[in-house]
Length: 508
Picture 1 (cartoon, rainbow, N blue to C red):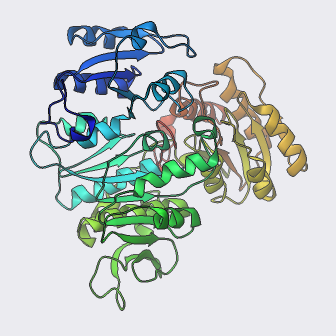
Picture 2 (cartoon, helix red, strand yellow):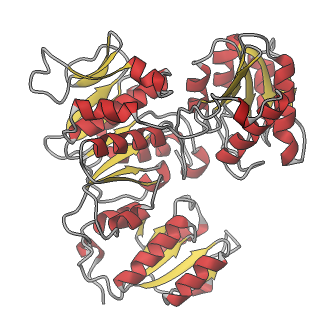
């Protein structure tokens, strides 16, 4: 018989015999099942779809898999399993039938992050954890923070919703000094005991209402990132919600609130003075001095000059400075940073028209930040809106729109929103059933409508899975269509690889 759950706070605790039902057979679910099998638990995996390769590996490990294609039914094998614990992958929302069953049966539910936190001492001293969340900017900030911390000399890995699954990181045989964990609201929903060194909530906007059930539940999940934080709660000075989440959090004694923003910083904040990013938080003379970290020119050279990306850099710098990374190392890291694709990525400039791929703008908040960076825009948008009304976004930016090109499944509410809030903006609907034809049609229409000085911007404000395999597939198809439409090849355009990255992964 395994120890009670409250006692299972170490890899070296007695996990043998614990009966655990794992929901999901994707990357997260597989890493959970693999880890639990190594610990000697009795594991049952319940998945919504088969995965022959992973099922074969789990069979070798002695882990049975049940395929439950009916999302509203609880498999008999799960009912008879006698689970002591359920560990849910991020794709299972709280209202899913299997989680409603677990709640009715009184079976505790964790996520992979909670499990990894309890197992983080497998290899020597446990690594320090830094949590990064927010509606937008998580991936850029996670990558930047990890890059900065590495420049300071620590062994560090980006993990969680980016890079490697966090359970794989805690089982790495060489171990890490620091894990920078990108964590979605889905994952935050299930944490219970995680106590990070530092945490940041970059921003909070309406998103994933369909998963959480309400904006209030989504907001509450984001706020869990600050719970039990021990050193630094980093928040966005331009987003009042993030400040309130810090104030509401039950943090460890001595944890400090550290703000970041693009204006001149107050004491204990990070900001910008005369084009220089500065730290007025982690120095003894912070009431009278500031530490210079980098210049806005440094950021522009790396494609990080847009306001929201400057904010991401400041947030990452605050996390790194909380770990005593020297200012010189932070500047070195910024100067050598290579952002991800599909986040404000410059495809090319042709005939005085700039083409930008921001396919990672999968919600209204991200699209808003992207639109603000350009004066006159032909906007390519649409997809799965995830229950979010983007009428306010359309109303806000109507004055900068040359035209709008609508793609995706949820076009009807977009058409209605433009008719009501931007009646003077020409709207083209790409109504095609063939995915291969969507972006060529959109690019051709954009080229017809755009004028010299315009930016053609793919910032969908919606998820991609209605027509594309992923946001990256959507962005790749857009880029190919742009190059074909303008008669350019990838090799002909030196700016094609210039990027300014970000991402969402499992969720916001």
